[in-house]
Image (tube, rainbow, N blue to C red; front, side, top):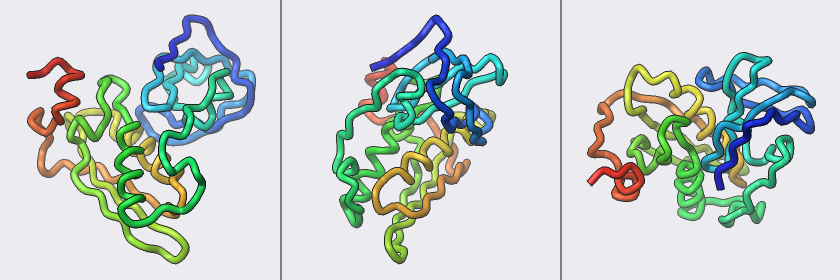
Length: 187
């Protein structure tokens, strides 16, 4: 479900956000006025006039803007550490909840994910992702990569994660999945 507000909302508590497009995190204090500009993939894009820009709020902080977090749709909601193929499936599912704020198609279906590697660590796993963007001049890379990394780190059993933006090979529209093409009206 997509939420938008025309009226400012005051944050109900302090919460961590990610600056768009810079990708750095900061804490917005309780009472800060925000407006929800979009919610895709479980996160909220907030316009925060007092901080001069847009910020992404994670789904697990939805209560700070008076919304309910999305119900867990995957075994990741069980809290048990995942490994092997189950972890890989969940990482792909998490990546499908990451969006460029300007394109209503997730980064997997846009064909932006070039590589996914999972390695075993003592007590958990490390996930390394290589992704690209639709254009080298896109200023959203840091923000999208940070969103993907944070969501992967939310998976049970993931201790470390890195999402690296790469430019080789260059992205082309042919990399868009059939599902993404349908959403974009491309045949």
